[in-house]
Image (cartoon, one colour):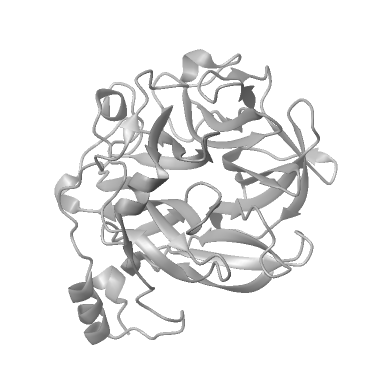
Length: 362
């Protein structure tokens, strides 16, 4: 039986950033030169406001001068700021403690404030594949204690900032290597340790500028209109194939979008951006001399400012730097379209006729 996503991909075509987005004039806000220790790439930074300060947790990759694979080391930095722009990084990377050891190669972290505690959700790479986890900050330094560690293969795990109908909730993005594409899923837990009762949150077919995969970006933000999720979307096009500093035959494009979910039932999609918010366009986002991969915008943090109106989105670009862009909630609402999921449930078998119908809708 054929997979309509994989066997009949839809080419996306040209994309541009939304006019509602304003990039910070001082971008990038973090690169390798800002590290207090050795590193080559500083990107995909989780950001949260906690107890009056902005905290950041960017991924740090260390390569040799030839960018030989694999990396020499992968870690996650940790720092804070009074204004959310100028960050001071701790002198050593984050240490996630698990059963008496420090987890290796912790990366692609998100920061969530839940019940007045700061949590790190992440994946870590090891000889038995990459595994996801959630850890709680000790309150000083860079030490976090693992709350749960799960089975492979997972990325873009994000802890929901509130309980939902009595349960904790998190977003997930399983990596099914032989059955593209990848969608955004969710699971629930009574205690942050044991997780289950999972289902689909958002499918690739729901995002007109994706044909390969989706992933949660920043932890959802509660607004008066619903739960706002900033996500990344990926499309692939062989016509864009090129060799980059990090990958040969690269033809993927990562962009940033937004979706809105019901306040009472946050598994129910109610609106979405039909066009991306951010696409790699500027010199610092496309610089071939520094970018590890091209055409890559990867949001991991989003914060509502003190005025209650301004939304900041923190994103990695080219897998080498950390950047910032802003908009307002009113502007964001103006570019979102009422929507519901095209597949009402994640148990629909593959039918090419149905996929053709979906393609006409989007």
